[in-house]
Length: 414
Image (cartoon, rainbow, N blue to C red):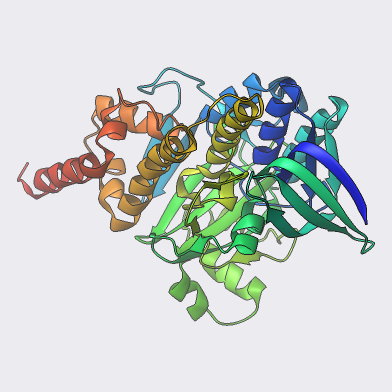
């Protein structure tokens, strides 16, 4: 068995693994990235938030991404029964980036890994992690198997699991636990958007609420392809009969606004299904390892938080790993677990209140409050650590309070 040694082994070459690798490489660490798939490859998570632009900029990946020409995303549109709520990222409470991208992840992730390899980062594709052991000092021995069946062993001082929905360390170390969110599933595909409108309408990312508990996403890309997806209770999706293609047409038919645009546009590939997509773990770090991005927790696609949490956690983990390897003390509980969970808790509240209907009441209420909208917009832009924002600091109660006020206004005679 061939053996090798590195400072840090990173599992997964998506945005989370790429950001961690880029930062650690900048710090002079010997990094090895192993990825189960070959790139380019299809994966979901195509809508970014402005917050993650700061991460790509800090680790030197922003220019390559910007040069590719991905569709710019300057806000997000929510629709329900003919009522439209549009959030403009330039009109938000928190200072920061006012735009980001909508991306086919096959292209996006390939730009990231190509750029890393050009910088000298060691990335091995089609290598699956099959076993890992940690000693009492946190050093690890990880076995990886290639497509040729050859098994190698990598010794590392630290392991970062950025494997996304592969969730390598949670599976191997028994860290999985049920999510606290309601059980939802999704079905999605890509289409050639031959009926795409000209101008801003054709570029807008939209969340079309077709039932109180279900919605459709529409994410246009700069290459003329659009991502379409349906999200709803698992029980409802499982109640549909017929082939995947027939069920897809039935789901698309829920949208009065988009059905005519897409009804005669066949999917580019058989629609994917992800059942019960919300995930959680018993811990985010341990002696010699840390979980980042979706390998730790995935909430819900409704506010596009996945990639931003992936890059936020990756950059924070990379900084702490570099610090620890330099011999400096690191407080993983305070500076990683508690920090990441503060942001996750904010978005978890918003996801829960979306499905209770409270957040929808605020979004689609006829009387918009500009200050409240700016504060919520900052959350939707990913700035969920800014406690100068009341909708961050008091997220547990403020959404409910404002929704109650909306109920009172709606019930009062005009």
